[in-house]
Amino acid sequence: MAYPDYMKELIKKVADTRNKRVEDSRQGISFPRLSLEAGEELLKKYHPDYRENAKRALAVGKNRGDRIPNELADILESYGHLDPVLFSPGEPDFSTDVLVIGGGGAGSTAALFAASEGARVLLVTKLRHGDANTMMAEGGIQAADKPADSPSAHFIDTMGGGHFTNSPGLVSALVADAPGIISWLEQLGVMFDKEEDGTMLTLHGGGTSKKRMHSAGDMTGAEIMRTLRDEIRNTKGIDVVEFSPAVELLLDEAGRCAGAVLKNLETGRILTVRSRTVIIATGGMGRLHLQGFPTTNHYGATADGIVLAYRAGAEFVFLDATQFHPTGVVYPEQNIGLLITEKVRGAGAQLLNIRGEQFVYPLEPRDIESSAIIRECSDHCSGIKTPTERYGVWLDSPMIEALKGKGFVEKNFPAKFRQFMRYGIDISKEPMLIYPTLHYQNGGMKITPDGETSVPNLFVAGEAAGGVHGRNRLMGNSLLDICVFGRRAGIAAAQMAGGSVAGSPGLHHLEKYYKELEERGILKGKGPVSPVLLPDYAGKIG
Ligand SMILES: Cc1cc2nc3c(=O)[nH]c(=O)nc-3n(C[C@H](O)[C@H](O)[C@H](O)COP(=O)(O)OP(=O)(O)OC[C@H]3O[C@@H](n4cnc5c(N)ncnc54)[C@H](O)[C@@H]3O)c2cc1C
Image (tube, rainbow, N blue to C red; front, side, top):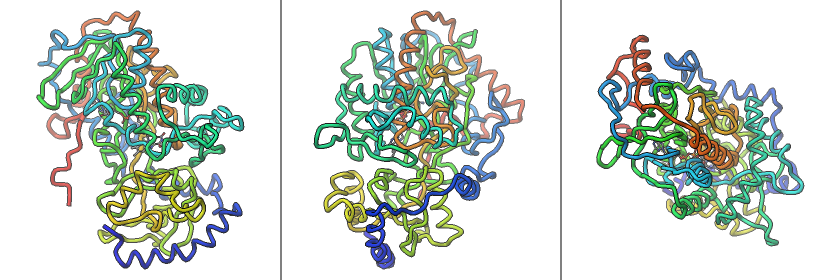
């Protein structure tokens, strides 16, 4: 839908202030950054994570008492697809050394490195291999591999972005491995953007002190996922099973992870996998739509791995910390929630209110930036109302062309350009209307730098893990995290598989978990069946 006339009138105010803003930008004059104290104040007042009624204390399990989002508590305080008393694993349908659950970037990287250690690997995934948040990533991947940069600077930026709540050991691993990961991806065939002289093009992201974002247009994730998937197809020792989500983990009598139970989505058949070690790489939870927020996430992002591991007794950190990306589309309706990469602001686009005025430095960390937008649209009454009564602020993409020349937007943001053109909006000439969208799960399973969890023989990599980013992730650090910790978990799980002798796999842990639910008065049949596997939108649209 092209912008209606009243919005076109408002867009004139953006154009009115543009020349002055471009001039300031050329002279290095920017909207002032917030002090640490002012940022904290803004977060407390406006960030959705701080809304107390959006959370409750978890009633069961290792993290009992932790306040977490209601929607996540609902699926953790619930019963699963299997009855542990009636279920018997019997003869396994598959037997392997390393079972990888999840076919996104973390799972694929883990599978490749586990196979490189000589392990037999089975990768099972919910939809098609590559239907994943990784595929949708846009802006880029961070690594300090330029002479003027250093892993130490990357370390400080990452810790600062996470408000110094990150696990320093995990961040050290992240930044130290980063340059090697970029070389590995390039050797596999990822086509990164380059300068004229053939060196890597690197850009700024929010909260970074140096230009260290490596990209492939605005489709960096698709380029990485394409390459990893191809590599898996061409690697001996890795089998892939699609459309078969894991619905429960199997543990032996000693509490060691020994496989998983899958449910084939096409036939409904229950399948069992016996394995020496297991790596969970099931990604995030955007499709739980916390507080009713739209999301950038892919259809299968329903926190399944969290449910499975929690029932198995794994410990979690920062489950209450979610990331709202500041720039999600609000108009046209068909694009609601869709991500507009931070790279757009990195290239010079500014955020403006209904009067065409700036109200925040455009590259604050995401939580601060989101809070400023929410404030503008609520208390300051300076948001722009859409025909369906949503609110947003302008992201002045035409400013990029004023700074960098005609054609820059289409060339550098081809996916976004097309997504808006489909509805008659040319983002090189008209700004985009945006509002924060549910984007990323900052917390997850507690891990060691090798991806080990508190459950023996169970590893985790990627968005399902917690601690690397503390309470807030910086842009470009997740594509990095999935490769760094995918690699580490893959190698460690393969090595452990070599010496591991698991007993008989079963669902004793589930019996125990259900008993705890009953003791807290949570009875079967009351809440959702989890893992939910796919979001249920029936009757909720319109
Ligand atoms: C639109 C968008 C843009 C982004 N842009 C960037 C960016 O520019 N830079 C950056 O660093 N990060 C970015 N991110 C974040 C980053 O892409 C993700 O955090 C990261 O790719 C997650 O990788 P993952 O492998 O952990 O999870 P995913 O890539 O989501 O993979 C998880 C896989 O597990 C499967 N799965 C789920 N449940 C089950 C189950 N029960 N059984 C079996 N399989 C299951 C899923 O189907 C999926 O295949 C972006 C995210 C989104 C959504």
